[in-house]
Image (cartoon, rainbow, N blue to C red; front, side, top):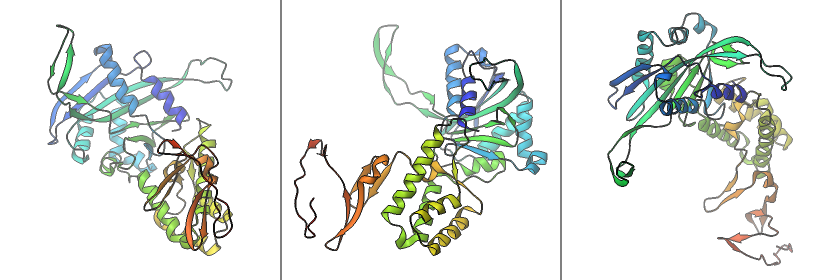
Length: 386
């Protein structure tokens, strides 16, 4: 799903726009024991509570596609005969009304999920009459083309609040507030099926993880019977290691700078199109960036070989997972320099009197600990003025 399609579903999650048939919950303690369950119509809750439930489900669809929001793809044989996919289809088709199916999914989650403390499993079913959209954006939507039936599942930690003073309007005074169990923002969850090209895609689920460094492999394996994708943070670390190992001494500041700059420009251009799928970068594209920097052919071949060994042949990576477009950092064991990514050209490396230096061009507006300073000119041994 692209950002525009995700946003369209998120807009449904408002009290006056959804057709949510039910909200089901399963409260689990730290011993993995079910404490309580419920099955209620959303409309049965007071409006304030409706908004809180909807806010939780909204946050399960919040994040960066390819990083926090990950497409889980089912193989054709799974769709035909796999038990995990069959369970999800059954829950969706029956609008979560069959207790046995809901209990089976909850059991899968409880038995597999490695999550400390208490947590709440929330489920909802919605039926969206998808309006036809004209290519002319000035024309209004017309009657529905199809009904998109889907379910959303959120797993939320339940945390104990700290004792504190609280205001009580009854006597216009502050008193000690007792400890309370409070539902926190979702840690993980998913939507099934996905809403691709504004239509139902039963071959895919949209998976959410709050922590991009931890995709909860055990949950994905139990619920989807699919291999978990490599976490975003691990993708970046492995990609960086491949560059370092393959290029060795040819991995200069200029090469690293060029690769980051080209990835940053690709991401910024891509982000202007909200209807586009998440941007991915192939091995061939990265190799082309390295070649443009003058990296020798044997090092390019080494990069391609190591890339395939780590990620697999024909596998592309999310551009956002291997480059931070809003960050350019130069680090030594003793110094860290943060640079506006658009002005990385202000930095260069040089050897002076046999010592390696990182040089930053600074003309005006230089401050040290908030104090404006003047940089006096002086001559180096090479005759250059600084």
